[in-house]
Length: 258
Image (cartoon, rainbow, N blue to C red):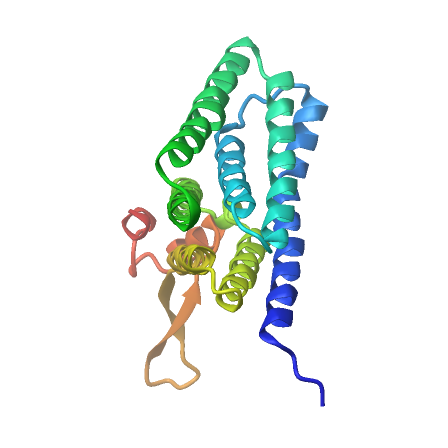
């Protein structure tokens, strides 16, 4: 009976992490197809892609400082290229003010910030210390970015009273991606990758739970003795309107969503 080694498990989870991460990187393609057809990027923000490029660049640097990190190196090289392509498209299809704003953001986040990290870690650290410092910086930036981007999505869900802006497919693949890289980090004994991905997964799960709030509505019981309460998960404003209209004595829509 064949026994799978820890090294083989690390490769399997790392390879799966590469595949799922690649799919996540390609998820904005429909958005850029719309931008291409409209010939304008108005209504969209370049910030997520600039921050995404910064995260990928930091982990690319982290992987280059070590040997045997080919899987981290490969996906972050691909990710950096894809995010940079998105930013180029933003610049091409943005109005003049948008071009200037995007270029300033790239200079601050992707040139100055990254350059400062490279300079300081090169001058003031070396060997394992440098790896640890870059690992902490990379993990911190990645977790902070993940929380901020998901929080902005959650805010949009609350404002629009619809889960349309936090689609299940995106949440599902982000969770799978975090899980794959978490186990990869465990098997290769890379604390920064394991901790970062576990934090991302926990944050995502908490936001998903918050976007599905149970609403209890009275429904007629088959027995003539009274009524029973039935739990219903609200996933769209239309459902809220329906229950408010048919059960006005239970709760008002604005009170529930405030």
